[in-house]
Image (cartoon, rainbow, N blue to C red; front, side):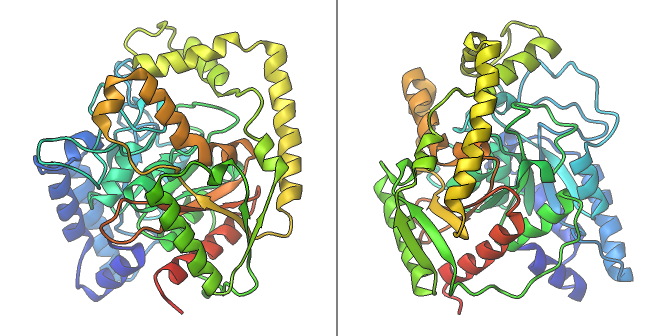
Length: 448
């Protein structure tokens, strides 16, 4: 897996070039034996090649922008000028093409990124499993078999996670409402970052939840995520010296997020935590009532999703993935009074959790409680699908509820099922979490 820093170094020395990189990734997407047909819904090869040629000229001239020449695929949720924004659905394909880039796509383009196709996704971003019955489900990078079977990619940014892990793009843009960036990143063995929501604009994207949506990158390293996050937030990225873990306090809560883990997950994450301890981090294990309480109360996501769909589509579920539409129907039972109470309860919980996390640099946990499940059984059984979906989302969705930020980075051994280590920070602690992530990444890799 290649990082942005390594690519830029090779581009500057002419050991590689943006045009060569683009051709490699086009070939990967086009490979009939690969996952490109399921991970991508559209790829304008001519536009990608032109953007790569422009970046190559800029490298030759020494006029390099922060993401110059980097292929970056876009979740089908975001507007790209001249393309239809379908949100992984069939019902939106009749919409006119976008007349302008969404702000985040515009920022990526202005930073020199090669906008590299539209990634498949869970329809309307409403599942953590990654299944799409309309366009096919991209198979997880791990566990593929010769007969075409495979494991779930994680959702809802499923195509982006597979694209990065499979070398079809250097990075991907995703959205995260309950874990939709972190889940496919963790289950495919790469990095993903969910920012504090307000830092990155969500305008020009099909919403799932106006109170929980956030926008973040999937990439091959923490540093790559930090570079892209700065662009998305309209900030100037400035590399910092590697932070030492000595003196860092990490909270390992005696809470639901550490319970009922697959053996592979429990072993990998506990091993990672011990490596962080050995590198100097203080691991504090204690009960956190405020965290446990985040798993109670009324969710407003279904109500917000249903409101948008009835206002903008009004098709009463026709043409939808039945499982997505079924989840939205839960919003019909939420009264105005319940919605208002849920918003007030959320604010109360945010204040409580911020107080509980004071004095800690981050909460540490598994990103996902299980390894990637097999696709076929999930497609065959609604009961198993919804049970698995809830389990996959369990460790990530609370971060969106508390309006925090979170990073996932791989912590499994090479060849094993991918497992993610999650670092969670309070609202606005994005830069600190990314800096901490760099140090943890180095510790897990055995760096001093």
